[in-house]
Image (cartoon, rainbow, N blue to C red; front, side, top):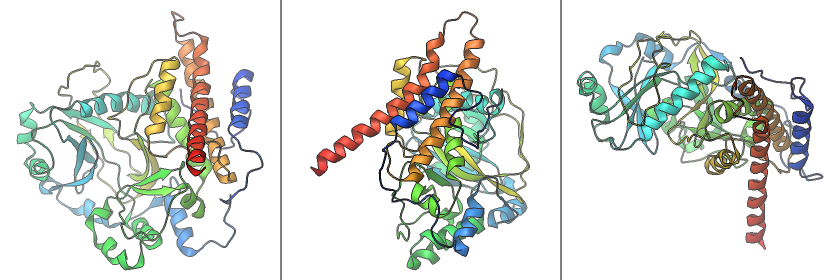
Length: 429
């Protein structure tokens, strides 16, 4: 059941029932501040510079790049003996990869923690829904390849390079999650980002820093606090805020719509709160890798156990790369129930997340339009998912009231923003 990506953003989508359409209009009206000034322009009021145009083309979804340093090195390096290196880290784990391999190993820092097992379980469920059930093409989820618990010593015996790279970062042996690598943005794009956002006296250092080869861009549609010329500059998880995305003339509606689709699937398909997930721009080989998927038949299990890794035939061909939106990092994701308690968890998750999603009750036309695009996409696709669930509910246990849950979630986000505004007004009084 492929979900439909609505580029035209109709207020009354043809697939929506009258009740759903009415709810959409009611929510959009509720989340506006009529007559407010518009400090952020919809469109750039001046001629686009060569640098900004180049960045816009490079960061636009599905743009392709024929070659880069990553491309050239990865296609010629003898990968069997290539050392692992750390390409990222988070609260629960660190990520390691070999040059020339489209596979990563995410290692738990603490072998006694179950966070990485939860990451695996939620990733497996969400990936299946995106790739097989709903066939979502607008947002990519890295293919999941396997899970290795600490007791699987033969895995570590076969990976001395990984042990060497991780021994000063993680307590070994530890849990390992094996997944498809989100390829970094190409070298040409990285150089443009450094030229645009790095302070002049830091540019040479940024160009020479190997860590900046691992460039993914976080998409912050809920923040307008982006600044240029920072001395503390890194391309690892570079944050581009809404005001910067507008300045580059990127398609904000498209980005917001895609986030709406992804969140609808995670909420009402996977029945999770999507807590602490990330949305990034990265790239992938246009020749998609193939995978012998043994993960569908795995039962949910509270205890970490060995799963795979699957036989993975990665087409290690990086000569033509495509910019795509990815969603990742599922270690904090929690299951929810299809009721008000589940909605409350989903709203709480948005409150705790980084500002990926557009926000309501904003003043500028650009922020209003981003919220509208996100909300319409989220409500329409949530309705599609839940209506299908009701059709498949032979015991009628779900009940028609579940169709109201997405609307309650959006109204909960509006209430969050009202509370934040009240606190800010009180602090300024």
